[in-house]
Length: 328
Image (cartoon, rainbow, N blue to C red; front, side):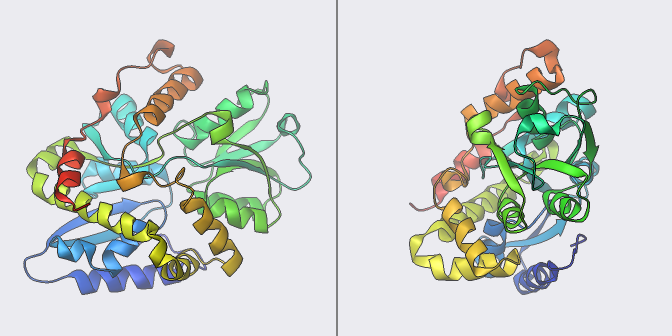
């Protein structure tokens, strides 16, 4: 892994140990790039789901979605997990031949602001921070602010900082950064630090397909069996993560992996098990994805304001094959 902020060192140790344990003759390697730790991946590595399917999963965490998209486009990454809109952006702005192959998480982001800010209107004239300026959660933020009469570049400044943990750190260190879209566990940590939630994507935008897995189409065709096995293992790992019987172990895992207090870990676990964050069996939310495209068309003016069909960005055949192979 590359991205090692203080307090996240344990993630590197666990991931490195898991990778080393998974390496064995006959196992196929897959290089996965992320923006922050992915719990089903950690479970799959540490509890043997990937090993069961003959996989050696090597993970790398990068500090921004730009770096993540570059890693996939260049072939340094075989597969990435990030908000689905990043795949759309790769197709539309970079001409990349990529496809979303699996869902995973819906958006439960919140608009978090500095203490003392009581309304969205009070963000006028202030600076808000995002990962990339024109993708995913930046579009969520722009949409929410537009709904309150605020236009980017005119009524407020928007600045690129990087992935979610970096944005929280930036808001804690620099009070002039007035707002950002944050999701769990970072949104929970933000509230502990005194930041305030003014809106949620669920309330302001509706369903939204967030973290998804996407790949280069030529790579997927050449490694179809490997990809199906990866998705199968991921589904099993997510099922284990959400199984009520595993709650004590999962709470400890959340505390360790995300460097949370026991109360924060409990809050995050409660969000996980409400079934509006993690999608069942890592399914892809088609209605949520329609909203992703609608938001890009509306906020960025993509496609002349009229989104295209969803199939242009999808190949869920690998997911369907994997799901059919996993025991109920």
